[in-house]
Image (cartoon, rainbow, N blue to C red; front, side, top):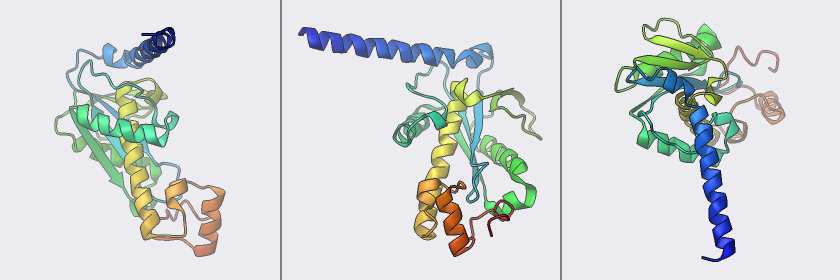
Length: 219
């Protein structure tokens, strides 16, 4: 091995150690509640968009599992999220997804719809969690012990995993809507209120996946 190769190997080793240190820091809640067997992270994606569903993820990871670069889904590239989505699915004890569509969002409001999506995601798990680590919220009508963690998707590996499952699931749905409902560019903005989206909404009018309570000031 020449000097250049040796230096490259040392850099890679240092980078890996730094990443493992970061993941350890993101596992403090998992360690704190380590007396529980099944620790479940819960998060949602899609509260803010003008169109599309709100999607929740619930993920139970095995104790001491290692998923490198696991992080808040918003801090990751789409390519990294897709790769982590597959790894989470492969390594998790169980993964649950809950989806609530635009009509229901309009009917019960987005906060209640997000709670409903989370309850569906938890119910979809193959095993019952002993404790829930939630991103900032306490979910109503759930009997399982809950720990709301502010900015939890950046502080807990379980919540981060749930955020990735929710985000990737929703993004894939919006890409499919882009094909079936052309003209709105859902694949690009994922239903969020970008200038491009608002212009197409004003030009074409609302489509079936628009949240009527969210678009009143535009159409």
